[in-house]
Image (cartoon, rainbow, N blue to C red; front, side, top):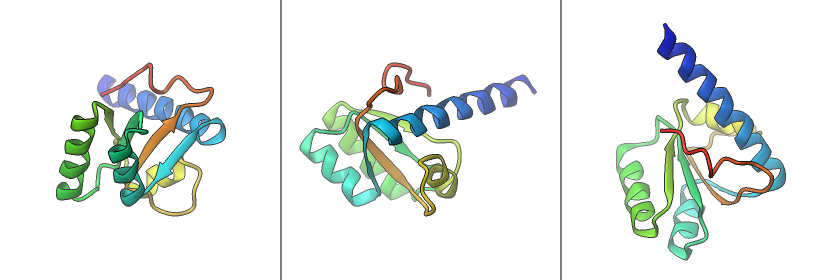
Length: 110
């Protein structure tokens, strides 16, 4: 019971931070643009939805490991990640290139 409550609180925390990043920072939404930003080295953090296919997830994690970029595995699916990003479509992964006023990069939650 306590772990479920804690995970919900951390979920709300990452959602509010992500909303602040979307408002004041720069974000690349989607698989192709995430890989592009990882290859260029401009990505500071990657957020991957829980229902992203395993092969894509492994490829993104591999590129992130090479680029020395943090990866956060979002507990919700791609619909929830899109909603948290303030969009009306599904988002499987996103790359944060500029955090803006948020502290999402400083508090890495796994």
